[in-house]
Structures are given as structure tokens and as C-alpha cells.
Image (tube, rainbow, N blue to C red; front, side):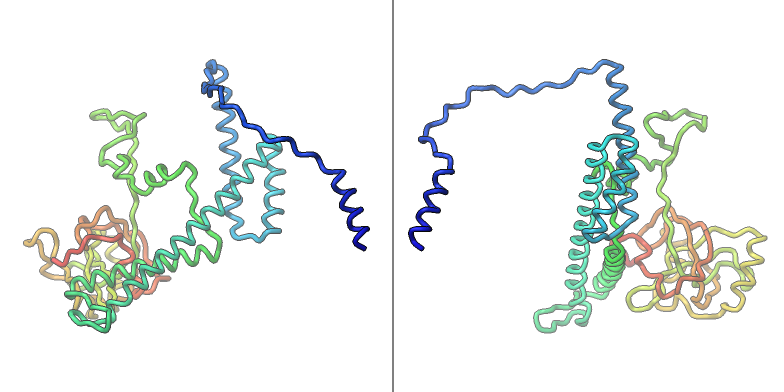
Length: 356
């Protein structure tokens, strides 16, 4: 047995390549050279057309991959093969493979980023949930309550916002819906911060459309904001509503006034009167921010009619001042599918604390 193993070892060693003697490699003596293409005008036009065509194919493929959502290993293989065959018809097999592979990698990266966002939001929710359970100014073990009621109220509103965002992110993770912006982080930030990017100026214009005094020859880009709010009353004499008073609930179930709608036309008031007649006399803005405390102290609502908070409407607003609308909101439609208790400060973007 030992002799057989020795014979096999000798036969195996005879097939191995002999190792050369060690030596010292000479120092590098070359020089890197970098250059750029200098295409002609015709070549540049061809490259631009080719880039636009490939970018269009990449966008279509990424859109198709995002619509498919979560896939297992086998489903991903089948999906990529199908998308590659479709892209090969308009390009080449190599380009189609690169496009489909990039789309899959982009979707997977978006899913990982969404998971990281969910973990971050969950950690923030857990951190905030500990303190509101402790009364104001007291301590329970190592957890200390907030210093005053104003701070506790703002943290509760912040908690509602975080919980709403976490629920949305968890739902998107379960459904496989990811957010992908083709163009990178800079374009994504510009899309979500139009004012900071200089694309939402009142009377402003884009670069290729210069402003012309006295002529309507410009392109305005403004952000459209909407919110679902509770109707807690109306302005005008009883039985003749002119404008709706709007509010949202806080974490304690208290309805706070946030603004009003623009005045309705006489024809619209007729239909509005019939809708609101059965709700008059209810209790709405009893313990929260009351109608009338606006930016100018002398502008108060001398007469307004409270309504039972049972209706929800969608409005379009321009800006916020503290925790109220700076200007009157524009009525869009009624929302019978929405429950009034679901209309919280999550409908409005996070604001600086203001209890005046």
C-alpha cells in the first residue's frame, strides 16, 4: 500500500511544471500617458445621438425592472433574459447586457438604501417613544420627561411624522417599490428642493427662457403642495358659509386650526350650505389653536360657525408660517374616503416650533 502511494506521488510530480529560480524585478521605467479624444463636429453629433439612444434604452429597461418589484433568483434570471432580448433589437448584445445588468444593480442598490432608511427611522421612533411616556418634568428610571409641554407637543408631532414615514417605507419594502433617480444625487436634490435650486421663483424663469419685461414669454416652475385637512368650521353668518376653516389633529386628539380656504362663489355656496347644514353647532377647535390668531394680531375672526369635524377636503397651499398657512388655501375636492382622525400634522412638512 505504501509502495503504491509512492509510485502515484512520483507520477504526479513528473507532471508538475518546475519552478524557476527567484529573481528581482527591475524598477518601472514607463510613464503613464493620458489623452482625450478630439472629435470633429460630425463625430460629436454621432456620439451625442448614440448616447441619447442608449440612455433612452437604459431608462426604459430600468422602468420595466422597477415595475416588476421583488424577484427571486430564478425570476431575476428570466426577467433579465427577456429584457436583454428586447434591448438587443435596438442596440447590440453587448450593450443590452450592460444595460440590463446596470438596471438590476441599480434596483438592488435602491432596495438596500430603502432598508437602511427603514432601520434609521425605526431607531428614531424607538428613541422618541421612551420620553413622552414620562410626565413632563419628571423622571422614570433613566428616562427623563421633557422640560415643558411645548417641547413634548413638538416631539409628539415629530413622532407622528416619523411613524408615517416608517409605515410608508415598510409598505414599499414589502411591495418592492424603490425610489431611483436617474441623474444622481444632485438631480434628486434639485427636484426636491426647487427653491434652493433657483427653479421656483415667483416671476422667475429658466436659463433658456430669459425674462422679458411686459411680455408673458417665460416658463415658471413652482412646487405644488396639497394636504388633506379636517373641516372644523366656516366663516360667514350662520347658514351662509363663505370660507372653510381647516385643521389637523395632534398626538392627543386635539384639533388645531391651520388656515382657511379662499372664498367660494355664490353658486358654490349653495351646494356648500346643503353639505354643512347638518354639521353646524358641533365642537371642533375647542382645546387647540383657535381660528383668528394669524400673523397680524388685529386680524381676528369675529364670527365663525363651528362644525362637527366629520368632513375632510384636499386643498392646495403655497407656504406655511409657523403652524398655519401664510395665505388662504385653494379648495380642490372633498375626500370622503379619508377618516378625519387620520389628518394629523404629518400632512404638513416639519416646521420650527412656534406656539404663538
